[in-house]
Length: 174
Image (cartoon, rainbow, N blue to C red; front, top):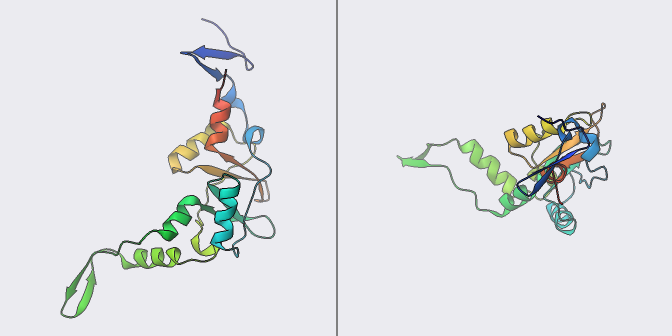
């Protein structure tokens, strides 16, 4: 049996893993200079920001710095995709929906959106700077998301942590 301290590295099958990374906090790896958008901005402006900065998603904030949502490449792609119509039956000149038509109408509304507010995802999963990297990794996997806005005690955006940030700190290149 051997002991590995916090600053040691272990080589396993030609990969190097940093030990003690589970004890690291989000504040140690988060991106502090976050590119954001406002709800009233156009989806074209957002798409340009994503492309120019090689990003896949942006936090949507208000003028005070509170997170209102996230807008991602997926949101923008969905906007351009054809929305499948719900299953229905025509009966005696009327339409009987077999699926919930409200979901369809919401998707149509989102696909026609011109502003960030109309296209963004409003239900945002966030994390605190003092939370562990392990907690962030578990949230990303469980919620099937790619990034977590980091909020301070006043619930204002102070950073963002992505799957890539976590991977960079879990697996070091030799």
